[in-house]
Length: 308
Ligand SMILES: Nc1ncnc2c1ncn2[C@@H]1O[C@H](COP(=O)(O)OP(=O)(O)OP(=O)(O)O)[C@@H](O)[C@H]1O
Ligand SMILES: [Mg+2]
Image (spheres, rainbow, N blue to C red):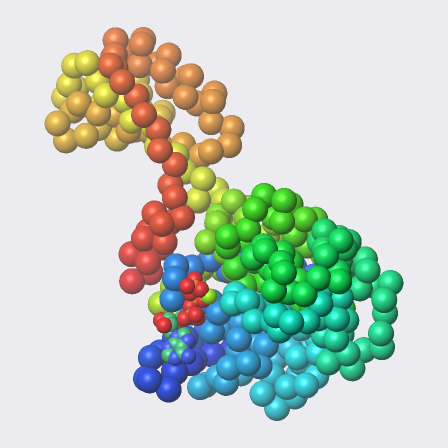
């Protein structure tokens, strides 16, 4: 099957001359969940806004369901649900009306049963008659999600859906995302939290400086991301690594005082106990130990350096 979204050599230069996208190619398969990671200002929202037809591209093409997002704006937009990063809703409208009207905007027949299900799934049912200005920030975000789902889109964009929301909303949201995926909805989300990508995505893309630096199956990426480092502070400095430790992924610091061991975050316990046993056998002792896990920031830095 052809990809549901196909982005080719997409560029965006804003009116002030800023190049926010520098040639992005991206195919998104029907039914997949893609997480886009990237630091502030990477170009994630710009990319999403172009696919949704809110921002005009400067070059390249974007097709959604075989239609061009510029020429066939109405058709492509109707296929898409967008939960924007910024809260923009009429504060004096009720939750029920906001969500129901949104369905109407896309020319779909009223479906109160569906709206009720959406509101219940997002724990908004008890607030259905409240005006938006009477809701908390997290509840307003739920309304945006409900709104985006009201016209039963084939593709759902969630732009930083969990920035500043509590554990409950996260849980509700991932529940809804899982249900949608079972219905075959394609989901693209941006996030700064690697755990979110880890939990939900099939593929992960990393954007930085207007370029897609990496696009990979999550399983492959997590192997790379989940590296941990164990550092042992030795009681006596070592001149060199003894051959008996050759089987372990070890690095000795220049002063010979520290041994560093890299391992992956899953299934690592055996290798660590084997390492400690081998150290004891080699009569190498340590006075302290610490571990650190590569953070998203490390990963970005590593990626940016690697591809630069
Ligand atoms: N309307 C605009 N005019 C000029 N520059 C813009 C405009 N909108 C965005 N930019 C710039 O384009 C770059 C990418 O912005 P974008 O909002 O796409 O980033 P982002 O990856 O979504 O970041 P964040 O994680 O902070 O949401 C930024 O440097 C931003 O300042
Ligand atoms: Mg953004």
